[in-house]
Image (tube, rainbow, N blue to C red):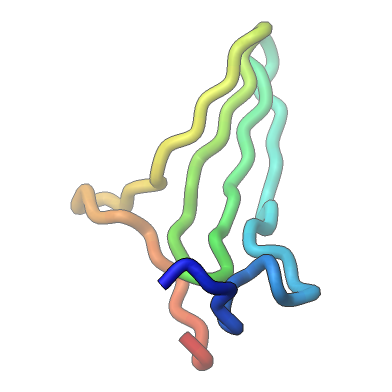
Length: 72
């Protein structure tokens, strides 16, 4: 039950989370789209002043953006 899973991201050389894009917005901060390579879920990560946050990225219908890969 608590043994190491051979499919666990820790056991691979690939990074689980990949920064897809980063953008600096004047007077607001920095924004990045981070993709979970295992689930395909996109997250919006923000840095504003001394604070930061991360939340799932939503499409126009309010659904979580998921990037499907052929091997998932």
